[in-house]
Structure formats: C-alpha cells, structure tokens
View 1 (tube, one colour):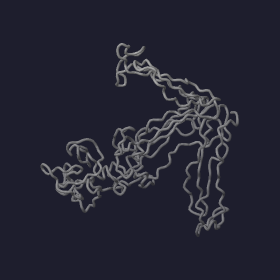
View 2 (spheres, helix red, strand yellow):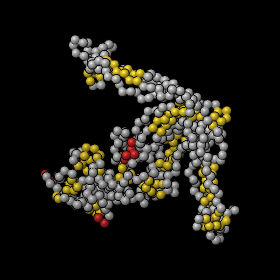
View 3 (cartoon, one colour):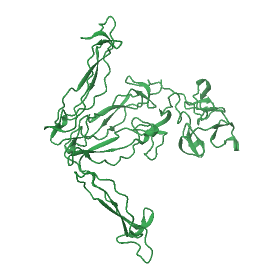
View 4 (cartoon, one colour):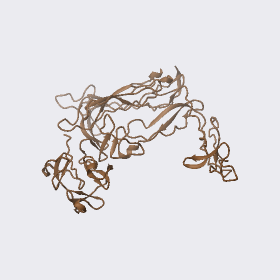
Length: 494
C-alpha cells in the first residue's frame, strides 16, 4: 500500500514511527511541547538535534540559519521557498517561516523518504515535488524556461524556444530537401521530463549556402547616425546560386551630434530608443527570406503535437484514461500522414493511497526516472521512418520506406520454443501511393528451454540440443537482418 508517514520537522529529516506519535494534532496543527504536527495529522515526538534553547523575546528566536521548533533551535536544511512570509501563520501546511521565506518541511518539499512522499507530491530526482497543471498532475503553478522552480514539476515539462531553422539540405541544387529546428527541455535540469518532439523538419528547395556575415567595418562618421558600417558574406556553393544580398549596410554613430552640426542626419531625429538618447528610429536589419517549400512530401507527413481532450477519468493509480488527438498539418499541401489521429493513454499515474489499491490494470508501483509511478507504462512512441526526408516528386523510392520495428511483444509460452515474440512495422509511403517490399511482421521463437514432463520437450520440428553449453530446443532460425535503408531516389514513376 502506498501509505507514507513522514515527519513534518526540519531537523534530522527522519521518518517517525507510530510509537513516537501520541494522537491527532490540535486545531491549527499544533501539539504539546516536545511534539510536532506531522504530515499524517498526528502529534509526533521531535527528533531535533537541538543547538540550544530558543532565544530573544518570549524565547521564539534563533541564530541565522536555524528555526525555533518546540522551544529548541534546530539547524535548517536548504530552503525550498514557497514564497515570502513574516510569520509562520502565513505559510502553507508542511512549511515554516524562516528568514522571511516559507520553507518546505523535510518530507513535504525535501528529500524523499524511502523513495516516497506525502500525498500530492511525487519523488522525482530523490526530491519530493508537486506536479502542476492539468490531467495527470495536481495543484497549479506557472513556470517558464526562464523561471524554473525545481520544487514543482510542470505537467509535460518546460521547453526552451525552438532554434532557428537550419540551412536547407538535399541531394542537389533546386531539388527538394529538408530544414530542421531543435529545442531543449529546460526542466531536465530538475529531472522533470518534457513531452513532445525535440526536433521538427519541413520540406524546402535546395539553394546556395551563404557564409557567415563578416565583422562590421569601422563607422565612417562619429555622430548623428550619419555614418554607415558594412558587412559582407560569400556564397559558398558556386554550382548552386545563393538568394539574397551579399552586402549589409547599417547606420552607425547613433549619438546625437553637438552644435554647430545638426543633431541627426536625415531621415533620423533625436529621441529615446532602447532606453538611450540617440538618433533613430533605426530600421531593422533585413533578413533572408525563409527557404521556399517545394512540391514534395516528407516521409510519413507532418503531424501536429498530441493534445489531450477532456479530463482524466480517475485520480490515481493509472486507473484512468484520457484521449488525445492530433492533426495532419501537411494534408493541405496534398501530403498525407501515416498513423492514427487519436489515441488513448493512461493518466494520473501516481499510486493511489490506502484504502484503494496502489495501481490498476495489472500495474505495480515502481520508480522510473526518480518518480514513483504505476507501471510499466505502455510505449506511446510515434512511427519513425528508417529513412527520413523528402519523397521525390512524381515517383517512388526503391522498396518504399518502412517504419522502424516496434518493441517486441511478450513471449506467449514458457518453454520448448513453443512461443513466439512478435514485432511489427508500417509502410510509411503507402499513403503516397508507394508500396513497400518485405514483411510487416517478424516472428522470433522464444522460451527455448526444453519443457518438462508431461509436456513434450520441444514443439514442432525443434529438437532438444546443446548449443554453447545451454540446452535448448533448436536449431533456431538465423536472426533477420534488415538491409540498410537506401537513399530517397526515384525508382518508379507513380
């Protein structure tokens, strides 16, 4: 049962046994001297290695870095701040006011105790953290990539901004290629994983590639935005012309001139720009046009990210499900997608508390990436082509393009090479009118150890034999090895 008794004390950070607890807390979560209200709602004996009695007016103060607990000054661990405070009454349950900050109490927002945390918190990275947002999470908080708070794991994680699109790459000039962009999971630093892809790609027309801009030349004037600074770049692909300008000219010397010169050269005027008094407004530097799309389709099409619809049907234990949908964003360009538009996943995967069973659907409580969940969770991985890129216009690649093989199924028997493990794959180009050659299902014998009486030792044509010192039912077929995927070159007109 996922039932935890955690000490709501800052000192020692120890779990308390029930023999040290004397009964329920008083109104206001208070207890008699020498006892503290624990997260279970009971008054439990303090396990504080005190540095001495509390001092100051009324005996309620302690030296910096310590807090007064039941009349004793106790050392304070690293504070997980829940916000400012002036008195303990302003802090949430399971926290105390220390040096003007509400600090989470050990076991509530501190180290996990035997891999477990109080209700509403999840052990992630050996720290008890609250999950925020909706669906499979509880509580609420607002986090961005610039304000990560490791006391709170946002549902779905927090992504950094997408990078700029890469240069269009492909087989030859003026043919179809691809551009990519990437992003990084900012909350990985808190061991809070992100949901969604780390990269995206789109089709484009291959053009020339520019070098980086040179350093700007020295400004040819000193004030009034009267001067100019020049940068240049070179087309690095002589056989494939570049699009855009090779020279960039920028106004410089932006500080207004002094009398007798005019303050600013035309068409600029003095004003406050970017919090400085200067001549402006300076026009933005021109940028290259984005890569042009081309009449080709990415293998498998381009999907939107999965989005949940509705709410989870239960609150814990992987007992509930939620439906997610996605859209084929490339369909409007006559590029179909391969895969399903809907799926149903388990949600609220944190184990339930007593008296409910910890987990549903034949799952058990386990630690995954530092978090206690009900698992193992099924794989929700999307189809991935063995060769990515842009399908040639008007024709099909040799043998089509398969997805990677799925994870193996469980063996359906226990001995005698009677069972099989199944893997499947999907033709990613069928929707484009390009069939694949080869099998979509792979069967591999499993449970190869001979059976015991009264079962026959081996199934089918297999015989008991010794192979490399092991008794098995064989001979086993050779493992199937896929040929390495070829390039997306035109093989047949469609």
